Length: 266
Image (cartoon, rainbow, N blue to C red; front, side, top):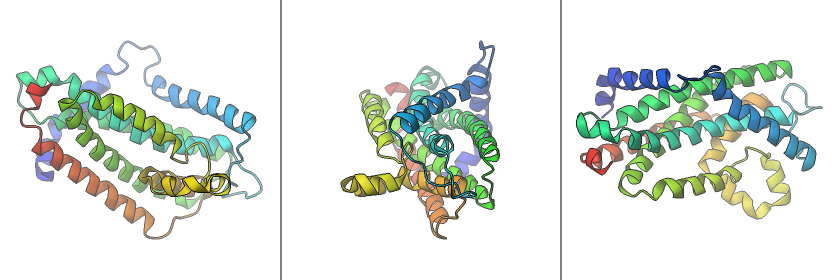
């Protein structure tokens, strides 16, 4: 299965190149638009939740006497957006390539993985902005390097979920609408816009639901590494990598097992 993935790498890259060329083809600002949405969300949320609702961010790792809600929020947004966009893109890409799949025989996961590669470029751009924000805050530490395996593990986890959902969506068109609702709820059950300490202090009955959410593990690990400059416990990052790799392999296996007639379904 993974061998087939490697042998078809040129095909995956061809779909990635197509998406690179077409995503912002008629746009003057080009890839800047890929940053505009998260930055606009950051600005609105930072004002609403830090000024109106007065959410207090945790102390910065380099200076425990101060915190930065914008930096805390953007760390969570970068992590959440990686998961969200890969899952949603996986479903939409399989649907949009239905006509091509009916005409030409190739693995249905090729355009899905190609689109995800393009999305990873956007994540790199967002991480660069995040790093610059932390430099401006003078919150710099060696734990930043842990963000790389954490985000890779999250990308694998999201892709595995996306592959399984894309097959379900091809067979049952309602899946994309259900997923949209579930992701909307999951966003608020993930500590992106609030710290876990706030939930533990004021909504202890929700703690078990939030802590059992796998995305919480990824977001919290990123907050530790990038914001608090604290390395998670020794088993956390290897555990996330194992979870991501396992989910990806299972997702790819499920996709392959159920995609023989995928062109006709689309």
